[in-house]
Image (cartoon, rainbow, N blue to C red):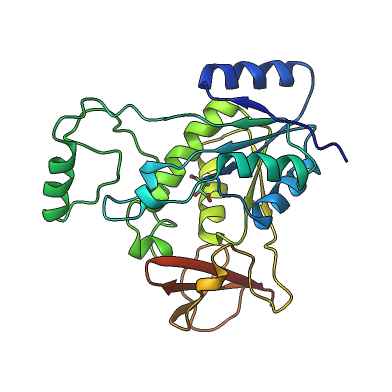
Length: 269
Ligand code: PAF
């Protein structure tokens, strides 16, 4: 076992330079984007990535663009030192941790809070990086797949995910990227985005890890409530099925307070 210290890169130009140099030497660069606070599910994505690449980059960045102003961005958990130790000790090391301070241009900050509040009151869909029109304004949308399931209750979420993943792909320039199938809709959206926009990146959907009782691994499992929403949907289109005739996926989102837990199971027919 290697237990090696990852190189920590915070600057996006340094990240791009490292990756270009690695690829110029014929290395296959694998990438796992995360928002940190890593658990065994993330570490299994690292292991999966290592099967497909020579060098591994993990990004740790809590993306404000995928949170609405009324969501829990400010209380999102973080433990950077703990994350590095887990990557070092439990995932047999990764080569680089990309940990940028911020990846958005917010423009002028004056009046941001009021602008958000006004937008919210007018019923506009806004995220934590939007303000009175200055700063970041380009968004990537996977129009049909982002609707429904998690998208129906979190209107800016998938737009924010597709946008930050695009930004990260443009900075890290990986050959391969791994996403967990636990976040099934997210995985399908990224896969579709890569296909539609011709990113030269292979997307791998990694199977989710389960506890012995079958529950998908998550640090928040302890909060699981019996209050659940359940759908069966088509695997490709993510449209709700009346009858299972094509490969389907059973998706569950369960709420406890404002903590949202996800699980899903693919059904082959
Ligand atoms: O799955 C996550 O942790 C995030 O949505 C991702 C893909 C890192 C984008 O911020």
